[in-house]
Length: 317
Image 1 (cartoon, rainbow, N blue to C red):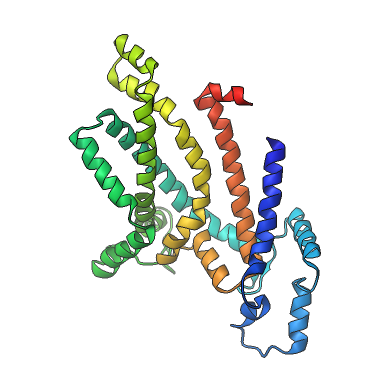
Image 2: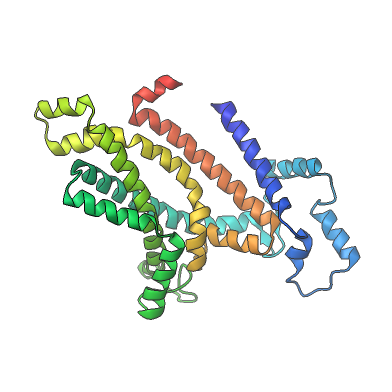
């Protein structure tokens, strides 16, 4: 298991190093095209040397690994700041948005999925299943644009950009309310886009679980339906959902990128968008490196959770 994770880290770091270099165009010209300066041949050659792009690819990779080993994620020449500082400034906002959305969508998806499967074939199940399938077919990008147009531009109920009001001077409770007010629309959009997947997974898993003999045995013993539903059936049906948590952590970059860009929310998604737009190689690599570490750490935690949720999984090791 440890060897598998180490091999995964090495492969992902290699892809993280290689993919930005495969983008079309000249990285140096793209990074410095917005600067008010005339790019001479001498300056171009010096920048190539400074970024190590004149070295063979394998030497560039070993230099990249050496810098990572020393905790150096590089320097963003577009933002004129350390890549690590930029990421650490954006990461808390993304964790607030995505972490809260994970919790809300997981709770809603599990409860609705359990209740829907328990009443399978009834009006509640059919109506909820139809609604979730329709909602699942709407891209998060479309949900975000609609929410922005209706609730920000038309009604003016919520702020249209940012994570807090600039220069508001709010402190304490006022500051918290301001942050939450800016969080409402991005959070609602991201949560709505994630609930259908959670609901469908739990519903399908529960449909199989409630047919198991131990559920029939629990009913025959006269145990209350609510206890059977959540402590017997749902506990065993939730194991595939734990797998989904490990996979979905990558959504911090992919799915949240669109939401954060639409609402100009200053998280990793928006930072990734700016890095890609400006061909900022150090910043792109730094973001992907942090994302790889987060994904692997979450998957390790999920692997440990398996044994707690279902002790039978431990025999596979």
